[in-house]
Image (cartoon, rainbow, N blue to C red; front, side, top):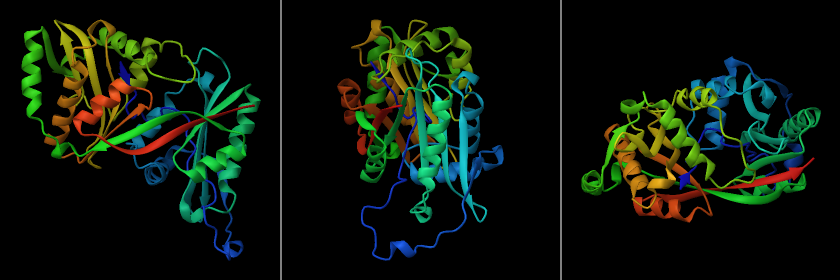
Length: 342
């Protein structure tokens, strides 16, 4: 059992770049200023993060985390990043890369977004065209993206995308959760030979943590089977995530063996957090360990004043959806994964 949680840029995403559903009669006289679309520079990280937060409020992101995600992407992904700028303001951005770990080559991912006040000027279309041209130049055979509203869906469908699966996002305020079960469940599991630890406490067991992570990730619903993530890449991209909170992230041990986990990305300044991945080793499923790990993370977030904790699951992942519902998570939005061939 695995839950994808809210990984920063877990897949290419395309959001809110189409026309509004109801266009005013005088839409044709909307002022059109010069828009420069250029490659992303590190100095754009703050502006790009602010844009992403506005367009995708159910994600947790900071400028250092955005840069780490970009800079640790391997060359074989052929990553490209652009921003759209007008009068010194970043009003749009796009990220395009090939999914380097899919078993089938040539699967590309795209995210693109434009701020509301800068729409109806063709910026989204220009960003999309740049990405598609880039994908074709590097042999991509299919593009994956996702949308969160009807505007984005129509934009994607006009370009030949079709819906393939749905990711459900849910959230809660950790400070309002009844945590009385945590102590009881921890004591009950201790009698069965399990104990709760923070990620910091077991960080020296990186090989075992890596094995557990890969087993959980392998069982996540996805459109395209993936190859196992190499250990060094996992250390760099997962453990190296500057938002990964070593004290809020929980691991359940069976003896000294990591058996289950719920890891959190935390933005203390923004008082927001997100599950990155939650999972249990196949040999230990059915023991309520994922619930214990999630409760421990919720408690730690509440202690530190986090007022929004977000998670996501494939809509077909009934087991993890049930766990989250019992914990008090309530649905916020659905991300529709959409694909098209090239």
